[in-house]
Length: 163
Image 1 (cartoon, one colour):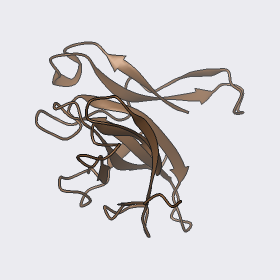
Image 2 (cartoon, helix red, strand yellow; image 1 turned 60 degrees about the vertical axis):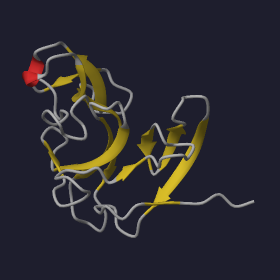
Image 3 (cartoon, helix red, strand yellow; image 1 turned 180 degrees about the vertical axis):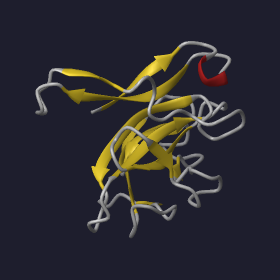
Image 4 (cartoon, one colour; image 1 turned 30 degrees about the vertical axis):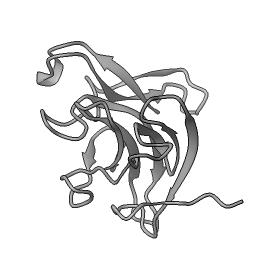
């Protein structure tokens, strides 16, 4: 199981508090728990100063890697210093050590998808594939959808609504 938690100021070189992803394992060996923390700290943190996810990582969704590649893929919400929310990708073999996918998006590690200015999701997005978009002024919220022919890519495109 993955979860996000607020790290205290000064953790990982960050000035202020920021969100990071942790992992827990079931002590009973099934999905209903009980769970205990796995590892000594976060399994995935936001990037360094100036990166698109410098303020941390929040909402995420983990799936098994496609086509028998083994391992796991995480689509995660990163928050920039500008307050914008974008989506990035990370992979893991065991769910405890995660690596941001390089070579996708305009920066190493992402983002693969971000809100569009003047659209219902212009302020930012939270979620995966189906996402929640918030307008620039925060006055409206809508559910959006993005699709791609390949999970580990930056070619995610907004699906237009049909009537």
